[in-house]
Image (cartoon, rainbow, N blue to C red; front, side):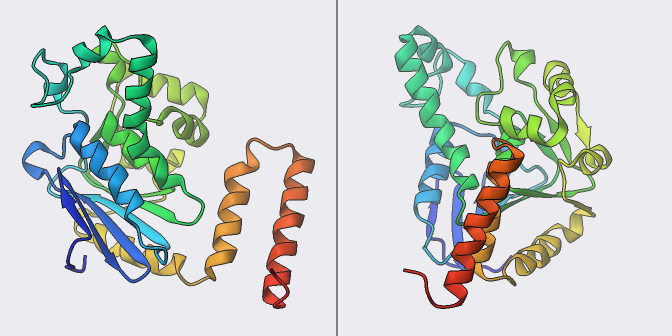
Length: 263
């Protein structure tokens, strides 16, 4: 990846921008990019800091692992310095706990914005919150050594960082249930076969493959890609006839824009 002055560099997250492509990097390789509350706030801030001309956002992790999941210190009574532990959250009211989790989820939601396409470049471990962060992106390019796993149930928890919806959408209910309930590893071959991975490459070729994909995504006019992404995102929630109508409306906007007749 091109070395650029960071727009943001704090709490294990670095954001750099190179024209229409932004790169968000998890920068805690000594902890296998384990996630904590501060990192989630930094991810949220990264999304809010994107310049308006960014069209593609690449998410990657430094070191051998994309992200090994939640930092286990969150489960200890002391938690993180100046932060509530999970035990503290459990002692709050339902409304307080709901608000706290909603705040955590913000780090995982902006990747689905219709005005950008997001690519997760995943190597090594992508466990729990790491798996859900990869699932938050539109596309996933993975190295041959990738190991996805949803381990929350083994800890007596559920996946709550927005990962359940895309997982079911990609692999179907039955396989998603089996992956989550068993906590087993999903390796590269299965990830590609089931659609979790758009592309599998040797680890040494991961960055180059992502650059090539980003370049291909930038080839089409931005507004056409934005409209197409919105159509595809909404397709599952529409009837066939409603989707046809959405296609007609989107195409009308595109035709008017191309003819110079848009407002």
